[in-house]
Length: 173
Length: 378
Image (cartoon, one colour):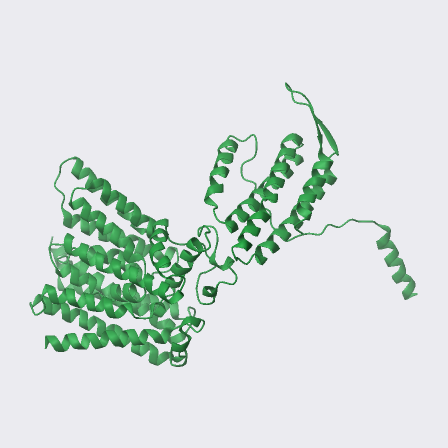
């Protein structure tokens, strides 16, 4: 009888399919200023200036990873508000910054610096980023025809962008 | 008698230098052969020796002041004593009472060897760096201003990658600023006693020539700025103040004084320099007394106001209170030496030893000068 109950319990649990995501403990940065806000343009300028302040390979790694995280959070927020075009370009920016992280580490390694800790951070960040992007992929349409008031409409292939963003990060897992 | 006292002082400096090597950190592999567990095994004896050394140092200090007033010591003698003190204590172990000098070396290493921004990257991120095993606060980004980091380029590169020579180059930098500050005080003050009061003050000597703290560099630029004001070079004076501010930020408090002198110059009003020095003393006392808001009152912070207090030697209240602080602050190290912990009764004892002599001196001055009587008779 006990065995039967146990089997029944398992059957009930397995009968409900549920998807689980790997959850990374990596914390994404605060996004800061958002498009549409009056401080967004000065914020972009400040970001450019900050790039020079972050001299050095470790600093550049930190800068690019931080910026990538910031733009990912920005993209997520914009997608939540169905601002697909802005979200799409923020995600692209995030990808660009993410791709720039590893070269700084390679340079640091060539200078004899131990990069094991940074590689671990990068891998954790990649895991977290993928987690967020996969969620976005699930919650948003595969395509979206963006129709602005005065200019030409543009078809946004969101699915392929999400896939490309995941691919960028998968290399660093 | 004079020769005997100078001879004893020479022996005392040698003893202090020798004693400093008892404080070598067990993780400091570069000084492994000199390491002894003495301070860990004999905490009480270490504390007693340290207390006696501080007391003896103050006795010598007061004796030199008395001898100078009685004209038993000439200016030349005092200059010779200052140089002798600087020369002998240059060889002392710098991390006897604080580990800041290791932090200076590691920050310059982050900047000049690893080519990283020390305000973003913490030393701890260079996992295999051998300095991490004994440097405290390696999990913090640079605490000091860019002027200081720029200055450290000299001792860092002259060390040619050797830690011991780099460490002593940093001490040499402090020694240079110590002598330079003595020279400026001599230039600014009309009374040579100011030089003696500052340059042979045990707190200044121990924290600068033994500990190699960068506060002396900050005060050098601030005092040099004042000297340039005296020579009517206003723009350069401000440049030097800015350099000073960007060493450790505390001299930011001097800005109102510099602005006030500029205003007086612009209005062609005669400057009362004694009021200026007194204002500087009071203003530099503010960050000193407020330092517990950030961390705690570290003894070397007293150099901030002492640099100006000695310029008004006739103001007995300022002079005695400054001397009382110089004396009491050096005893803040004793509770840790004795108990080996920063917790428990240590903070209470530290506060008590810091303020008791100052309060007693203040009370003595009030009674002696009968200030309270004057106040009531008005």
